[in-house]
Length: 517
Image (cartoon, rainbow, N blue to C red; front, side):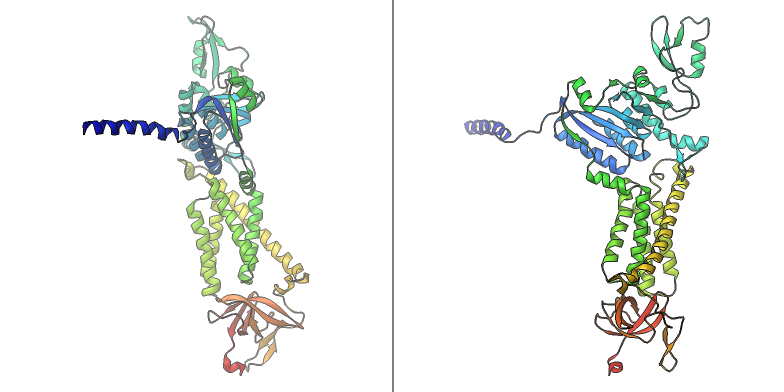
């Protein structure tokens, strides 16, 4: 028995290496192997998620160094904080922030989170104070309490990055807060350099001190004044210890460090499409298309094309902000809940207008709120004007979309009737007077009505649920228009009688067998 156990153990020890040889192990991370990851454009949730996926791909490729190529003016504070924390939690990867042109605001936060910073010869780094932009593109002043609340999480992240990567805390704070001024001085005796505030600077440089301190030559003094935010070019960043060097490109940086770049992970077509549809002008156009197609789909249901365009434009209107972090789930609840109420008013219980008004307000409010961004996620942001500014911007776009939609509707009504095919879809008033039904049931003329006239007999082109399309005589031709059944569902092909035709509302009922006979 003992011999059998020994043989079994020996067999297991033999098979384990054999099994291991049959499986290719994942590539081990090598400091000499690098992957370049691009971070450009607006910093938002979409870019945050894409960057994290690229980091994981770099790890799968066996890279030991990630060159994060940064070119951004910033973006959402919450997204930048997430990226910063993520980078700091990558102990197996050496991260180099390569500032290609600019790392402003959120870009500076991300750059300082990396293990080191390298810049192109004419790059810019800094200026990460929370700001308040107004709809006209300017900035508004924040109160001391409001600014302190907005700065708090940003300051904490900068101070943590400074401590982790060996930057001076005063320099890190100077990028976020206006006060105090920061001076860069050195000792004539020991050559030691340090950063000090204005009070300490006056003390150390006063005559009669045991150790003589003077401003560091070739560096602006103070490095950051009491009324500015620290924003430095490549030369100053290198002299004060923020940047470890310069490089003309990521490939040049890799050559200087003896790194071999195995892949460059940058924005693809999908990323560029998201950036395009996030632009305010693009969103204004999408909103105009959505409102116009929604009107057509309600007025002429059953044709397919207006409904498809309406859903596509709505998907882009709320889907893109959802990807980038500007829309939240409750914004979608407002939009789709509002649309449900509008549909209830039109197709189920028409005439009372309550559902229509409430639903319309909900839709517009939901769309406006998709412009707010991450204001609710950052502590204290609801108490500062940032939320009001975002709401104003959203209201401006939504009101502009409504105005453009009305103008487009007027244009379509004027010119579409003269176009082939489209003239069959337009509800138009004929040149003569309109026809109504008298008290005796005899057709009469009433200029207040529009085609199809009350009493006109036609046929359902689509199922009426209760809205749909029907075909009615028009001079020597026929036309199709949107109608609403007064008795619920009506099957396509059923004869219909117009009961009411007022403005854009055509109410019909099915013709009974007795009436046909």
